[in-house]
Amino acid sequence: MWTIEYILSQICIVIAVGIFISTTFLRNRKLVIFLNCIVNSIYIIHYILLSKYIGVVINSIAIARSIWFYFDSKLPHKNYLSLIFCSLSMTLAGVLTYSNPLDIFAIIGSVISTFGLWQSNMQVYRICLIINNLCYMIFNLSIKSYLSVTFECVIIITSIINLIKFYKETKKKKDLIPPLQQNQL
Image (tube, rainbow, N blue to C red; front, side, top):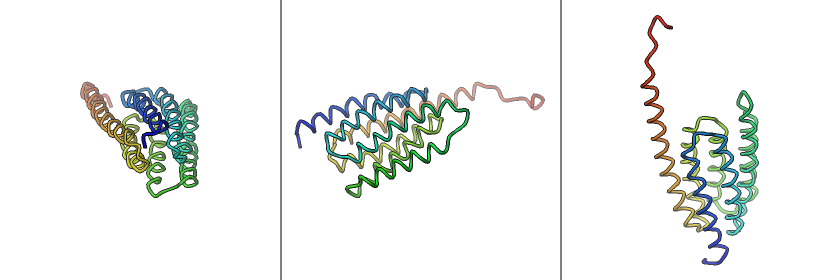
């Protein structure tokens, strides 16, 4: 278990999670998408080192997805086709590289993550992150990437804290805006 590949894979996780946690603090969707590309690249190395090819393929598609969503964000409306295509690509890739029943959690988490990045509400993104990380916690447990499981917990906790923090800030801002008077309607 403590091979050089395993140790290097765990070092990759430390780096990826450090970057990934920072996305829960951000409000800028484009920066979140950019950082997701970096995180997915590191996860690819992690899964190559663990010989878990479903993770390699799904994270490769996730990079393409992030780039696509970045350019889609410049459009005046939501491109539902990009959401459907990316979700189906993740699902198909997962099915084709499926090796054990717990691999389904990587597929589910990736599709949920795809929706979270596609839509523009950062609070919904954080909720999707929590679900995604719960799925990946189970998946990483199945491949004995214990440091990943630990960090998935950290990401979940950080996401919940920031979800509450940004909710309170948004609520406070709404409370500061005086309600419209009847004659102003």
